[in-house]
Image 1 (cartoon, rainbow, N blue to C red):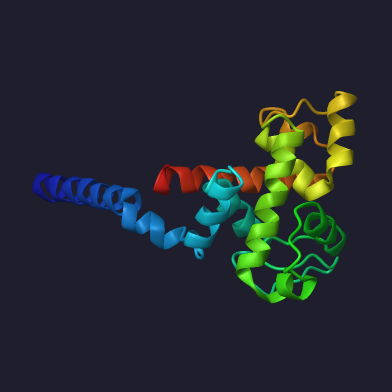
Image 2: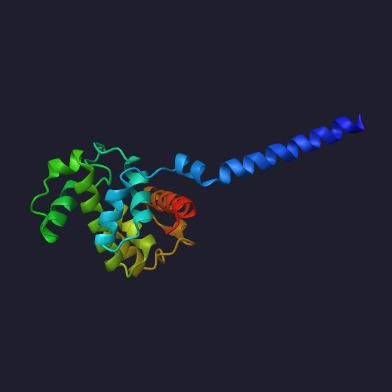
Length: 187
């Protein structure tokens, strides 16, 4: 009986060891958390000085990398940019060759527009990525009011104070995927 117990303990230890190896391996991480369009993301992230893993995390939460995604509210493409916001970005950034129709179906212009927008939000909110993410979801004017009125301090530690449940959840989900991507891909 004692021998059988030792075999069971060794089997449990072996299974635990294999499980740790399996889930901590890089190939498993890249399989569970792939980054489609990685070259396009890196190109535009570099151009606008944004962390490409942040862009990838936004895309993962917004559309799970589906290029033709359109929300019930009308947000377009992989980065789910609202048409009015997209038109403003096209004008501000002088993306004359980009149309709203391009944003609906083409990954590259959608990633370019969304990355430019997150870069502008990071600038507006002094490189505070949590405030920029909240603004990407709820709008910059609303987030600026939260910060000004001290409704929320812009930190991840106080994210539960964000008044909009959707935005609170959005920030938490993007940060979750950002951290996963950082663990797997690093910089």
